[in-house]
Image (cartoon, rainbow, N blue to C red; front, side, top):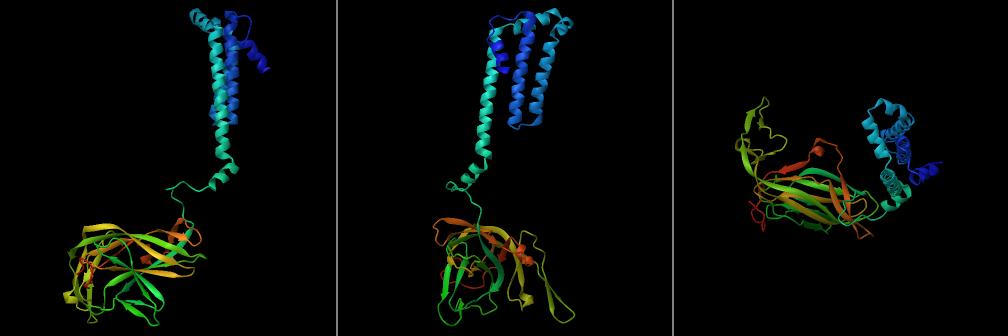
Amino acid sequence: MIAAAFKGLLMADEVPTPEEAVPSFLHAFMWACIFGAVDAVIAERRWYVWAGALGLSLASHIVGIYWSWIKSKTGPRFAARLEQIASNRRRYKWVIGIVIVIALLASIGIRVYRHYHTNPNIMSASSTQSPPPGTRQLPIHTLLVRYEQGILPIRITPHDTAYISQLSPNISEWVWEVPNGGRTPIRWPKDIHPPPPGDFIYVCELTNNEDKTLLAVSVSFNVSFHELEMVPVTVTKNKSGGESISMPSPGSDHVVVTLGHPKEAKNLTAARDGAVVKQFTHPISLPSIGPGSTAKIYLVNQSKFISKFTLPTQATAIVAGNAQRIQVALVRPNVTVQDVLPWFGLAPSTYHWEGVPGSP
Protein backbone atom coordinates (compact mmCIF):
# COMPACT_ATOMS: atom_id res chain seq x y z
CA MET A 1 0.00 0.00 0.00
CA ILE A 2 2.81 2.39 0.88
CA ALA A 3 4.65 1.57 -2.36
CA ALA A 4 1.49 2.14 -4.34
CA ALA A 5 0.92 5.50 -2.67
CA PHE A 6 4.44 6.67 -3.50
CA LYS A 7 4.18 5.35 -7.03
CA GLY A 8 1.02 7.33 -7.53
CA LEU A 9 2.54 10.38 -5.95
CA LEU A 10 5.93 10.47 -7.65
CA MET A 11 5.06 8.74 -10.92
CA ALA A 12 1.52 9.97 -11.60
CA ASP A 13 0.51 10.28 -15.26
CA GLU A 14 -1.50 13.44 -14.68
CA VAL A 15 -0.65 16.54 -12.68
CA PRO A 16 -3.08 16.95 -9.75
CA THR A 17 -5.56 19.83 -9.94
CA PRO A 18 -5.00 22.81 -7.60
CA GLU A 19 -7.75 21.46 -5.33
CA GLU A 20 -5.96 18.11 -5.10
CA ALA A 21 -2.37 19.43 -4.99
CA VAL A 22 -2.25 20.53 -1.34
CA PRO A 23 -3.91 17.35 0.09
CA SER A 24 -1.63 15.25 -2.13
CA PHE A 25 1.48 17.10 -0.94
CA LEU A 26 0.40 16.85 2.70
CA HIS A 27 -0.31 13.15 2.23
CA ALA A 28 3.25 12.61 0.97
CA PHE A 29 4.65 14.69 3.84
CA MET A 30 2.61 12.55 6.25
CA TRP A 31 4.28 9.36 4.97
CA ALA A 32 7.74 10.95 5.23
CA CYS A 33 7.06 11.88 8.86
CA ILE A 34 5.84 8.36 9.61
CA PHE A 35 9.05 6.91 8.15
CA GLY A 36 11.06 9.36 10.29
CA ALA A 37 9.16 8.34 13.43
CA VAL A 38 9.72 4.63 12.77
CA ASP A 39 13.40 5.24 12.15
CA ALA A 40 13.70 7.24 15.39
CA VAL A 41 12.09 4.40 17.35
CA ILE A 42 14.45 1.81 15.83
CA ALA A 43 17.47 4.03 16.53
CA GLU A 44 16.25 4.48 20.14
CA ARG A 45 16.37 8.24 19.95
CA ARG A 46 14.77 10.40 22.60
CA TRP A 47 10.99 10.21 22.84
CA TYR A 48 10.35 13.76 21.65
CA VAL A 49 11.98 12.98 18.26
CA TRP A 50 9.60 10.21 17.25
CA ALA A 51 6.66 11.91 19.03
CA GLY A 52 7.29 15.10 17.07
CA ALA A 53 7.43 13.20 13.78
CA LEU A 54 4.15 11.42 14.55
CA GLY A 55 2.57 14.73 15.53
CA LEU A 56 3.58 16.30 12.20
CA SER A 57 2.26 13.31 10.25
CA LEU A 58 -1.10 13.48 12.08
CA ALA A 59 -1.34 17.25 11.54
CA SER A 60 -0.56 16.85 7.82
CA HIS A 61 -3.23 14.16 7.48
CA ILE A 62 -5.90 16.26 9.21
CA VAL A 63 -5.07 19.42 7.25
CA GLY A 64 -5.16 17.43 3.99
CA ILE A 65 -8.62 16.03 4.79
CA TYR A 66 -10.09 19.39 5.77
CA TRP A 67 -8.22 21.50 3.16
CA SER A 68 -11.39 22.59 1.39
CA TRP A 69 -12.84 23.94 4.64
CA ILE A 70 -9.50 25.50 5.69
CA LYS A 71 -9.18 27.12 2.25
CA SER A 72 -12.56 28.80 2.67
CA LYS A 73 -11.46 30.24 6.03
CA THR A 74 -8.13 31.61 4.81
CA GLY A 75 -7.49 34.42 2.38
CA PRO A 76 -7.68 33.57 -1.36
CA ARG A 77 -4.15 34.85 -1.99
CA PHE A 78 -2.62 32.59 0.70
CA ALA A 79 -4.55 29.54 -0.53
CA ALA A 80 -3.70 30.23 -4.18
CA ARG A 81 0.00 30.61 -3.37
CA LEU A 82 0.04 27.36 -1.37
CA GLU A 83 -1.77 25.49 -4.16
CA GLN A 84 0.70 26.88 -6.71
CA ILE A 85 3.66 25.52 -4.69
CA ALA A 86 2.02 22.15 -4.07
CA SER A 87 0.95 21.73 -7.71
CA ASN A 88 4.59 21.99 -8.86
CA ARG A 89 4.96 18.25 -9.20
CA ARG A 90 8.60 18.28 -10.17
CA ARG A 91 9.63 20.50 -7.23
CA TYR A 92 8.08 18.60 -4.37
CA LYS A 93 8.83 15.24 -6.01
CA TRP A 94 12.57 15.99 -5.77
CA VAL A 95 12.24 17.45 -2.28
CA ILE A 96 10.40 14.39 -0.98
CA GLY A 97 12.80 12.05 -2.78
CA ILE A 98 15.85 13.79 -1.24
CA VAL A 99 14.29 13.68 2.24
CA ILE A 100 13.62 9.94 1.91
CA VAL A 101 17.18 9.24 0.68
CA ILE A 102 18.69 11.25 3.55
CA ALA A 103 16.50 9.42 6.08
CA LEU A 104 17.52 6.03 4.67
CA LEU A 105 21.25 6.90 4.69
CA ALA A 106 21.02 8.24 8.24
CA SER A 107 19.23 5.08 9.35
CA ILE A 108 21.91 2.86 7.80
CA GLY A 109 24.69 4.94 9.38
CA ILE A 110 23.11 4.73 12.83
CA ARG A 111 22.69 0.98 12.56
CA VAL A 112 26.33 0.50 11.53
CA TYR A 113 27.54 2.72 14.37
CA ARG A 114 25.42 0.90 16.94
CA HIS A 115 26.59 -2.46 15.62
CA TYR A 116 30.28 -1.70 16.09
CA HIS A 117 29.97 0.28 19.34
CA THR A 118 27.41 -1.70 21.32
CA ASN A 119 27.94 -5.27 20.12
CA PRO A 120 29.41 -7.10 23.15
CA ASN A 121 31.32 -9.58 20.98
CA ILE A 122 33.08 -6.81 19.06
CA MET A 123 33.75 -4.85 22.26
CA SER A 124 35.25 -7.82 24.05
CA ALA A 125 37.48 -8.58 21.08
CA SER A 126 38.74 -5.01 20.82
CA SER A 127 39.31 -4.74 24.56
CA THR A 128 41.78 -7.63 24.49
CA GLN A 129 44.01 -5.92 21.95
CA SER A 130 47.19 -4.22 23.12
CA PRO A 131 46.83 -0.42 23.53
CA PRO A 132 48.83 1.78 21.17
CA PRO A 133 52.32 2.92 22.28
CA GLY A 134 52.26 5.73 24.83
CA THR A 135 48.82 4.82 26.16
CA ARG A 136 48.56 4.95 29.94
CA GLN A 137 47.47 1.58 31.32
CA LEU A 138 45.74 0.88 34.60
CA PRO A 139 48.04 -0.89 37.09
CA ILE A 140 47.36 -4.61 37.48
CA HIS A 141 50.23 -5.30 39.91
CA THR A 142 50.76 -3.85 43.38
CA LEU A 143 53.51 -3.24 45.92
CA LEU A 144 52.86 -2.60 49.60
CA VAL A 145 54.67 0.58 50.66
CA ARG A 146 55.34 1.71 54.23
CA TYR A 147 57.35 4.66 55.54
CA GLU A 148 59.05 4.99 58.91
CA GLN A 149 61.46 7.44 60.44
CA GLY A 150 64.97 6.25 61.21
CA ILE A 151 68.31 7.60 62.35
CA LEU A 152 71.89 7.33 61.15
CA PRO A 153 73.88 5.12 61.04
CA ILE A 154 71.90 2.53 59.07
CA ARG A 155 72.13 -1.07 60.27
CA ILE A 156 72.30 -3.59 57.43
CA THR A 157 71.66 -7.22 58.37
CA PRO A 158 73.57 -10.16 56.81
CA HIS A 159 72.66 -11.03 53.21
CA ASP A 160 70.62 -7.84 52.92
CA THR A 161 71.06 -4.75 50.75
CA ALA A 162 70.41 -1.10 51.58
CA TYR A 163 69.51 1.31 48.78
CA ILE A 164 70.60 4.82 49.77
CA SER A 165 68.86 7.75 48.08
CA GLN A 166 71.28 10.65 48.48
CA LEU A 167 69.23 13.83 48.76
CA SER A 168 71.44 16.61 47.43
CA PRO A 169 70.89 19.45 44.95
CA ASN A 170 73.79 18.00 42.96
CA ILE A 171 72.47 14.41 42.78
CA SER A 172 69.32 14.02 40.69
CA GLU A 173 69.40 10.29 39.84
CA TRP A 174 70.74 6.88 40.80
CA VAL A 175 70.80 5.11 44.13
CA TRP A 176 73.72 3.94 46.25
CA GLU A 177 73.60 0.16 46.62
CA VAL A 178 75.20 -1.11 49.87
CA PRO A 179 75.09 -4.93 50.12
CA ASN A 180 76.07 -6.99 53.16
CA GLY A 181 77.30 -10.39 52.07
CA GLY A 182 78.85 -11.21 55.43
CA ARG A 183 77.61 -13.05 58.48
CA THR A 184 77.42 -10.06 60.82
CA PRO A 185 75.51 -6.76 60.60
CA ILE A 186 77.28 -3.70 59.21
CA ARG A 187 76.63 0.01 59.59
CA TRP A 188 76.47 2.77 57.05
CA PRO A 189 78.19 5.15 57.03
CA LYS A 190 81.07 3.49 58.85
CA ASP A 191 82.66 6.68 60.18
CA ILE A 192 80.13 8.77 62.08
CA HIS A 193 81.09 12.37 62.75
CA PRO A 194 79.66 13.81 64.93
CA PRO A 195 78.82 10.77 67.14
CA PRO A 196 75.20 9.65 67.69
CA PRO A 197 72.48 10.74 67.89
CA GLY A 198 72.75 11.03 64.16
CA ASP A 199 70.65 12.70 61.51
CA PHE A 200 67.04 11.65 61.06
CA ILE A 201 66.22 9.79 57.85
CA TYR A 202 63.17 8.12 56.30
CA VAL A 203 62.92 4.49 55.23
CA CYS A 204 60.68 3.44 52.33
CA GLU A 205 59.81 -0.28 52.43
CA LEU A 206 58.48 -1.89 49.24
CA THR A 207 57.02 -5.39 49.74
CA ASN A 208 56.02 -7.74 46.93
CA ASN A 209 53.07 -9.88 48.09
CA GLU A 210 52.48 -11.44 44.68
CA ASP A 211 53.78 -14.74 43.32
CA LYS A 212 56.02 -13.29 40.60
CA THR A 213 59.30 -11.42 40.81
CA LEU A 214 59.27 -7.78 39.76
CA LEU A 215 62.40 -6.75 37.85
CA ALA A 216 63.91 -3.29 37.31
CA VAL A 217 61.46 -1.62 39.70
CA SER A 218 61.52 2.12 39.07
CA VAL A 219 60.04 4.66 41.50
CA SER A 220 60.45 8.46 41.47
CA PHE A 221 60.39 11.05 44.25
CA ASN A 222 59.77 14.75 43.64
CA VAL A 223 62.50 16.40 45.72
CA SER A 224 62.96 20.06 46.66
CA PHE A 225 65.63 21.90 48.68
CA HIS A 226 64.86 25.01 50.69
CA GLU A 227 66.72 27.82 52.39
CA LEU A 228 66.47 27.93 56.19
CA GLU A 229 63.99 30.46 57.55
CA MET A 230 64.67 30.77 61.25
CA VAL A 231 61.75 30.63 63.71
CA PRO A 232 61.72 31.38 67.47
CA VAL A 233 62.13 28.58 69.99
CA THR A 234 60.68 28.91 73.50
CA VAL A 235 62.20 26.88 76.34
CA THR A 236 60.26 26.74 79.62
CA LYS A 237 60.90 24.96 82.91
CA ASN A 238 58.20 22.54 83.97
CA LYS A 239 57.24 21.44 87.49
CA SER A 240 59.21 18.19 87.31
CA GLY A 241 62.44 20.11 86.75
CA GLY A 242 62.66 19.38 83.06
CA GLU A 243 62.34 21.71 80.11
CA SER A 244 59.62 22.08 77.50
CA ILE A 245 60.37 23.30 74.00
CA SER A 246 57.72 25.00 71.84
CA MET A 247 57.83 26.38 68.30
CA PRO A 248 55.29 28.04 66.02
CA SER A 249 53.10 25.75 63.92
CA PRO A 250 54.49 25.43 60.38
CA GLY A 251 51.12 25.02 58.66
CA SER A 252 50.09 22.28 56.26
CA ASP A 253 52.57 23.19 53.49
CA HIS A 254 55.72 23.72 55.57
CA VAL A 255 57.95 21.84 57.97
CA VAL A 256 59.84 23.04 61.06
CA VAL A 257 63.07 21.31 62.02
CA THR A 258 65.29 21.71 65.07
CA LEU A 259 68.98 22.55 64.74
CA GLY A 260 71.47 21.50 67.39
CA HIS A 261 71.67 18.77 70.00
CA PRO A 262 68.26 18.06 71.62
CA LYS A 263 69.89 17.70 75.06
CA GLU A 264 71.25 21.25 74.89
CA ALA A 265 67.96 23.13 74.92
CA LYS A 266 69.54 26.51 75.58
CA ASN A 267 71.49 26.28 72.32
CA LEU A 268 68.60 24.80 70.34
CA THR A 269 67.35 26.69 67.28
CA ALA A 270 64.71 25.93 64.70
CA ALA A 271 63.97 26.74 61.07
CA ARG A 272 61.24 26.19 58.53
CA ASP A 273 61.52 25.63 54.81
CA GLY A 274 61.97 28.92 53.02
CA ALA A 275 62.73 29.79 49.41
CA VAL A 276 63.25 26.91 47.00
CA VAL A 277 66.89 26.43 46.05
CA LYS A 278 66.35 23.57 43.61
CA GLN A 279 63.73 20.96 42.79
CA PHE A 280 63.60 17.97 40.46
CA THR A 281 62.31 14.42 40.06
CA HIS A 282 64.71 11.83 41.42
CA PRO A 283 64.19 8.37 39.81
CA ILE A 284 65.35 5.29 41.71
CA SER A 285 65.75 1.84 40.14
CA LEU A 286 65.92 -1.39 42.13
CA PRO A 287 67.17 -4.60 40.48
CA SER A 288 64.39 -6.91 41.71
CA ILE A 289 61.84 -7.62 44.44
CA GLY A 290 61.03 -11.31 44.75
CA PRO A 291 57.76 -12.84 45.99
CA GLY A 292 57.37 -12.16 49.71
CA SER A 293 60.51 -9.97 49.76
CA THR A 294 60.98 -6.38 50.90
CA ALA A 295 63.35 -3.78 49.47
CA LYS A 296 64.31 -0.76 51.59
CA ILE A 297 65.11 2.68 50.25
CA TYR A 298 66.80 4.99 52.77
CA LEU A 299 66.22 8.68 52.07
CA VAL A 300 69.19 10.58 53.53
CA ASN A 301 69.64 14.35 53.38
CA GLN A 302 73.25 15.08 52.43
CA SER A 303 72.83 18.83 51.98
CA LYS A 304 72.94 21.99 54.08
CA PHE A 305 69.33 22.75 53.12
CA ILE A 306 65.97 21.50 54.34
CA SER A 307 64.88 18.76 51.94
CA LYS A 308 61.29 17.78 51.17
CA PHE A 309 60.04 14.93 49.01
CA THR A 310 56.57 13.88 47.88
CA LEU A 311 55.57 10.24 48.17
CA PRO A 312 54.85 8.43 44.89
CA THR A 313 51.68 6.41 44.32
CA GLN A 314 52.87 4.41 41.31
CA ALA A 315 55.99 2.67 40.06
CA THR A 316 56.94 0.74 36.93
CA ALA A 317 58.49 -2.71 36.67
CA ILE A 318 58.97 -5.76 34.46
CA VAL A 319 57.25 -8.97 35.55
CA ALA A 320 59.58 -11.96 35.36
CA GLY A 321 58.88 -13.84 32.14
CA ASN A 322 57.46 -10.79 30.32
CA ALA A 323 59.72 -8.11 28.86
CA GLN A 324 57.01 -5.42 28.72
CA ARG A 325 57.29 -2.68 31.35
CA ILE A 326 54.05 -2.22 33.31
CA GLN A 327 52.52 0.17 35.82
CA VAL A 328 52.60 -0.93 39.47
CA ALA A 329 50.31 0.63 42.08
CA LEU A 330 51.94 1.50 45.41
CA VAL A 331 49.44 0.58 48.12
CA ARG A 332 49.98 2.63 51.28
CA PRO A 333 47.57 1.59 54.06
CA ASN A 334 46.49 4.33 56.47
CA VAL A 335 47.53 2.79 59.78
CA THR A 336 48.93 5.83 61.59
CA VAL A 337 48.65 9.59 61.22
CA GLN A 338 51.97 9.56 59.40
CA ASP A 339 50.50 7.36 56.66
CA VAL A 340 48.18 10.11 55.38
CA LEU A 341 50.93 12.70 54.86
CA PRO A 342 51.65 13.31 51.15
CA TRP A 343 55.26 14.41 51.77
CA PHE A 344 58.06 14.35 54.36
CA GLY A 345 60.82 16.79 55.29
CA LEU A 346 64.34 16.37 56.66
CA ALA A 347 66.60 18.77 58.52
CA PRO A 348 69.97 19.80 57.04
CA SER A 349 72.68 17.20 57.50
CA THR A 350 75.17 17.57 60.37
CA TYR A 351 77.70 15.30 58.62
CA HIS A 352 80.40 16.13 56.14
CA TRP A 353 79.86 13.72 53.25
CA GLU A 354 83.08 13.01 51.40
CA GLY A 355 82.66 13.27 47.62
CA VAL A 356 79.24 14.97 47.79
CA PRO A 357 79.46 18.54 46.42
CA GLY A 358 77.70 21.12 48.61
CA SER A 359 77.53 18.94 51.72
CA PRO A 360 78.13 20.64 55.11
